[in-house]
Amino acid sequence: MGEVKRIGILTSGGDCAGLNAVIRAVTHCGVGVHGWKVLGICKATLGLMSRPAQVMPLEMEKVDRLVAMGGTILGTTNKGDPFAFPMADGSVVDRSAEIIEGYHSLGLDALIGVGGDGSLAILRKIAQQGGINLVGIPKTIDNDVGITERSIGFDTAVNIATEAIDRLHFTAASHNRVMIVEVMGRDAGHIALNAGIAGGAHIVLIPEIAYKMENIGRYIKKRQTLGQDYTIVVVSEAVCTDSGEVVQQTGQFGECRLGGIGQYLAEQIATQTGAETRVTVLGHTQRGGISSPLDRILASAFGVGAVELIAQGKYDYMVTWQNRQVVSVPILDAIKDYRAVDPEETLVKTARGLGICFGD
Ligand code: F6P
Image 1: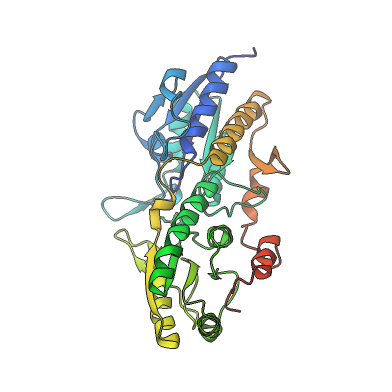
Image 2 (image 1 turned 120 degrees about the vertical axis):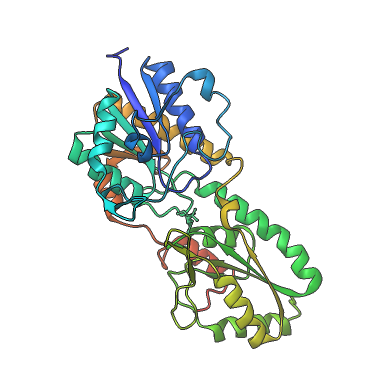
């Protein structure tokens, strides 16, 4: 066993299934295998801004039953860029120095940051500025972090969306309805594409492939004339209206929240085809609950991989999944390319080969 290290782990950005499995894996490998101290940092960078820094010592007994549990026992936040942090008095302050000071006050040798591309970019900037030995782990149900084939949380979200589609087939067929399922994904259509194929959807709309309402109407009418009297449409929340407008609301903190394209489509489809339509918005159900076995496995492999990077002193790297292996890549390389659906990729070709309509 090498020198005893003291490491921190934080989960940042939107939660997803698999985060607790990562926390468990880092603790099992860091504490159990290497004999290090592992501190969980509460509420992402907010925990390092607090004085004293808000932490949770992670021990084997505390994490042992976490492998399947959804959410994150450490808490998280997807608000408040530390470089332009909105204060209660309305001012906007750069609080990165407080985070750096918080990290050093804990006497940490390294920090594992579990986040999507946005969180990892912020954490890396802070790490570069403050001499923090950072290792990244990609998580996001959107699966849009560059280089890695998979991010933690994506598989569970696809499972949940697929199960919803499976259920909707029966009720849609019973009533001859067009059922529209709106799924998350921010700017990427991976959840819609994967769940659409797995659930046997008839129409899949993703932001990466522009659609025309008339093509969707024609496709549904053709199904009707063939006696296929119901249709399942899966739409990603980031899909725009036919005329290119983003469908969103402004949240209570002034943030933009995607959502509503399903309802828009339902009205358009009803007008064009005369079909009865219903909308199901899956929302945060895709992030919660028990994680899928694949997400638990990925989270476990990433947690162990991140600890091993620290053991090797390999910082500013992120673990990725490539060709059935955990491979480390510079964080900078991973965050510079956002991974959208490639309209030429295998799964798009698969969907087209199955006769799924993208509305193009
Ligand atoms: O990035 C993950 C994600 O779940 C997106 O798919 C979605 O648009 C967004 O976060 C929702 O964020 P919030 O939890 O702030 O509503």
